Amino acid sequence: MGTGTKLLLLIAFGCAAISNVLLQIHKLDIVDKPGAAKPVSTNDSGVQTAAKIATYEFNNRSNDIFLFKVSAIDKAKVQVVKGIKYIMEVKITRTVCRKKGNPDLEKCQFQPDGKLKQIFKCHFEVWSIPWLHWMKTTVLICQ
Image (cartoon, helix red, strand yellow):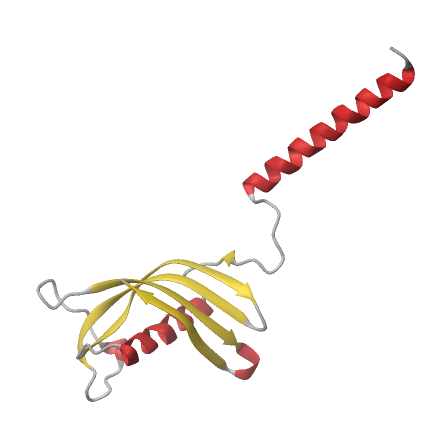
């Protein structure tokens, strides 16, 4: 084998190795995609506020006589999109507080086990523009 052929084979093997490494990185999703949603702590203050905003929207849309409040935030992501989009998987639970009278939701206890206890698993997306002090629920799906 001539020197030129050996060099060509060496380059081909090198390209194949680099190609394989890049494929593995892509499969593992190690490289951040610009603009992609990224996981964030469920304890993040922005996530907590966004979950409350979405639950407030749920309560306004619901015909239930009782208020619901967040009982767990299972997963949260953020995406930068002309502000911040919070994407969350949240459990909301019926409280003992009736909607009438505008009670302080923070002080409302959850319904005890029994007929009135109800828990929804929700997918919330809330768009926030922090510099305008503005938040809006854009997706609200509960089952």
